[in-house]
Image 1 (tube, rainbow, N blue to C red):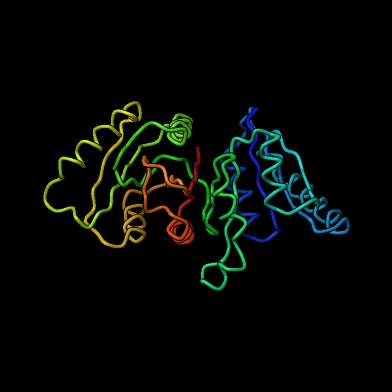
Image 2 (image 1 turned 180 degrees about the vertical axis):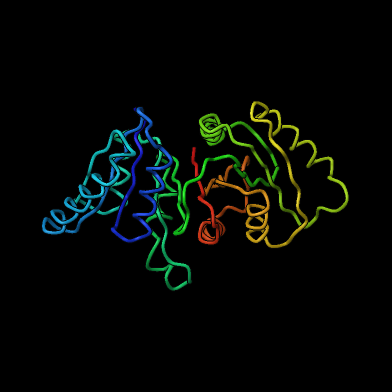
Length: 260
């Protein structure tokens, strides 16, 4: 049984993430969805329990196996991490709030913190995203020092589950008419590592990385973007904390973050 955790703070965005999860795992008998909330005290816990149970009732026609968990100990991140480890979570699905820099300081930080935890993949669902079949997946890669890794194994697992068209994008201002020998060599290594998924490669000579990813996502009707918040050579050295944050906030499609 695969365990999927959906944290809720009872905002519309978190409810949308729960609905996204319900559609994503619609009628799958081998998936258990945990609806999770962190309460500050016992009074809040009772209210949260009732709200989660109400949501459970609403979603039970779509999800066969569900449970409700409300924690009060420690803090949100520590408790969610503990539950994910205990349950050997397959995936955490979370919404994200706050578009402006000021909003980002006070909201959405829990989601971003979880994407940097080395526990399980975290799928960040934009506020207006609705689940469609995952037909097209995008990986952004710098294509330097490509090698096998635990993060790559996670990516392969996701790709094997959904069998999407795989698009691999490299954005570099130095691209001109033809690729350098270094790029060709790393592309060939990546193609070999992912050969069972028949990857298609794209090279864009643009200067704004995030704008390029968004343009490409719209053009290719991308359903999911896969990134690694901490540096993995397979992905992109650009994905330091602030780049990860910017891409997640700007993306109009769900972003899956993976770790080793």
